[in-house]
Length: 396
Image 1: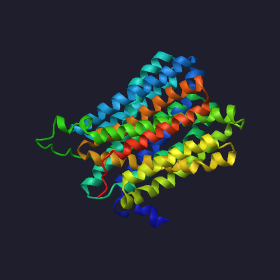
Image 2 (image 1 turned 60 degrees about the vertical axis):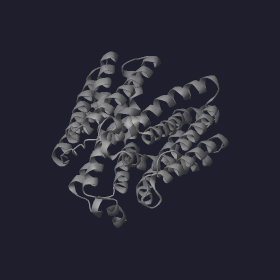
Image 3 (image 1 turned 135 degrees about the vertical axis):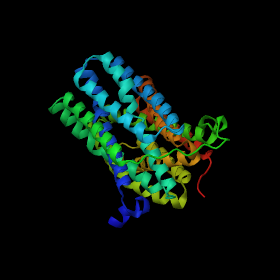
């Protein structure tokens, strides 16, 4: 077991930089898992906002996060030190959650989320871009270590939400948000003292407008594929709890068991996918994982038993595990000179899919049924599969 874990590290040996990157991703994951699942409850119960304002809150936070993180990604590719940008994101996170801890005015919180909290979303792609740049400059493969970094975020989401709800209901949201702010302060000092500063790669004369990610057909096709695949994924996540309770007459806790099972399966798949990507290629593995996701949605449509719902999570775990672990690397392989922007585009494509998924799932469920949502998930997943087949294969 020790040999396998060490094989995931660059040079097959943990060092200070690698451990720091792992620590950063784990705490970013926990900070997100502490705040995102409880945010709607906070806005509803503590702030007293009606459902429309809650929806607007999440929409504004997501859109501002997409815009800010893409701008920060552009800055990082223009030569601004990634370490400095990560430090700024951590400071903004600490400030934002301190405001959340002591304020209950909806409009103040909306502004704080749009300015401070949204900026923290840029930290994760910058950490992954920094890790890839470090590995590239030492001529080391990135697949296995990137998968290990992504698994840290998933691990944070496995243990974070139960602790968050315990703190929120037992101690209150003030303590929850202060703890989140403290995590970003810790991350600031970890980043400052342990992550290296990487000098930007000198630009070549031909690097200009034609090198823009927005003019690269493969990058755009891959981004579109991710929008569709995570639109389907978010539609499932939104609809499944209500489908289980209302349409299938099963206990609502079944949905939690399903999601926990999927998260448990995802982590080993993430760790293994980096190794197998070296053998089979990232694009091929991504395509197979999307097929697994499509079969998962078909299974949800056809299944009616508790055992079946739990068993289907193997397909869901394959889909999320592989696409999460290899997606970043595939974006980076297609445009290595625009590491910050393409890594951020990967993150933003997932967020955009999430926003669209929420709107589409609500509309379909309102006019038809939650069961019909999974038909839409299947169609979205098939579109994603067809799109990714048109992306250039980077496997040598």
